[in-house]
Amino acid sequence: MKDVSKNQDIYPELTHEVIAAAIEVHRALGPGLLESIYERCLIHELQLRGHNVAQQAQVDITYKDLVFEESLRCDLIIDHKLLVELKSVEATTPVHKAQTLSYLRLLQFPVGLLINFNVTRLTEGVSRLYNKHTSALSSSV
Image (cartoon, rainbow, N blue to C red; front, side, top):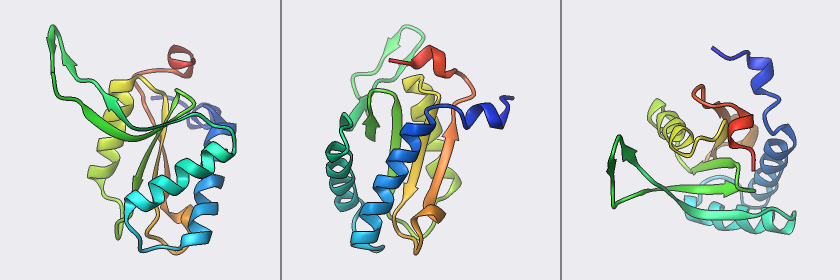
């Protein structure tokens, strides 16, 4: 089990910048809209702040020597190293967290954000999740 204080040191500036951008979008739009609207606005806000954003990025699945032709799609990858999954739901569930953790494992990223925009205060809808199967050093770009 990784030490939580060490986990908080994984891309702290980038995660704070993404959360700040999400707060900016949420302040302007409020809760209750479709996830796709928040996604487009967050992409725009992050690009205005100078970040590289991959939207609906492909997540390949392999098992031993079996390669799936189909792939999964994660919402956003920021600066080639931070996964961001977006929701606009009443409450995030363990399934949402499991989905995000699966993407982290498949991408071999150490940290990701799960952001639910359907909340009164956005900080209540942000979860920082960590991949216990990798380290920041193995996925740094």
